[in-house]
Image (tube, rainbow, N blue to C red):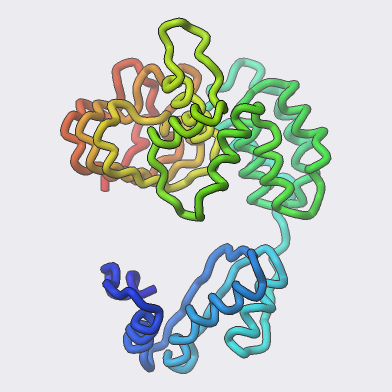
Length: 325
């Protein structure tokens, strides 16, 4: 909050100092604070944490508002206790089935060039899948990403028949995106649970760690290395994720980037301090069936001294898909 108000990161080390600074900044000022997509981890710890965060806001002006969006009633009730106000819960209904299907198809076929039959069989399966999503936009986006990874009728039927669909728990939907991964990719993904939320990963360290634990399959060709296989696994996990914003910096030894152009939902990409990178998307990323960066709106590039062009020759890019910021 302080960073948003002052347009710079506060250089304060203690909770008291941060609270006092925020209290001073908003003293008698009317504000509207949006806390979007809050999840529950531990009710008591969460309550204590949010009490610390919100305590300085009591000095704000009369008529100030706090809007919290969440998927669980318990979070709304907890916030009401924290701010000592009667809860005002507004429950949003799910999307209409046709709207949910449109959203599902947008993500399931993102970046895919339609064949003459327009994937009629796959679209029929999608029509059955969407009936189990209860109108949830998040479920449609997650399942769409799972389907987009493999345009195979058997894969889509497996998703349809999964007993995880239809349960009214968003965690079950998210779990499905993990369950359908091959075993070695499940292990590679699960390794990330060792790290705290918002941890900054070093690509090379992560690859070496997975190799040491035996999670990486040996390369099929004699010239390939375990590191190459490890990087391909990382590329697959990045590709099937639902990332919308990516910021990469200080990757000074990278000569190529992961296939970021194949992320179907990526809207904002910021790259800095990568002196050896020549292209944002190269022709070895397997993008012969994809149009790269289908939804990208913002691209910020800084200190890429070796950059020759946005795309290596031969990459199929959408016209006008990039807006330099």
